Length: 71
Image (cartoon, rainbow, N blue to C red; front, side, top):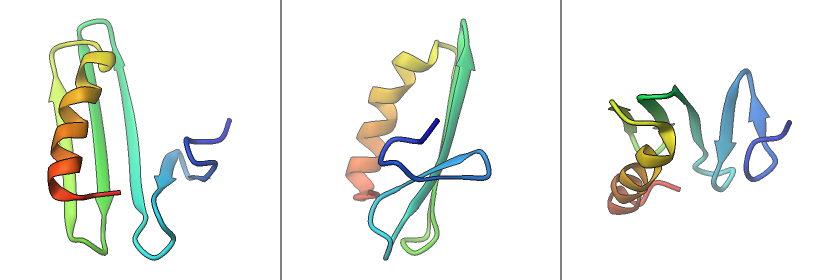
C-alpha cells in the first residue's frame, strides 16, 4: 500500500516536495499513539507520544508541524 502522496520507503512514508521531503512513521493501539516526522533539510525531528489512540494524536501533530512549516 502506498503512503499518502504515493511515496513509500523502508517502512516510512515520504511526503512533501522532493527538494525538502519529510520522512514519517506512525502507529498505535488502544490507549497509545505515536508518530515521528523527520525533515533533514529543515533540521527538524518531531516525535509525539501519547496515552490516547492515534486518531487523537494527529491534530496535535498537525499543530506542531504547521507551526514549524514542515511539509
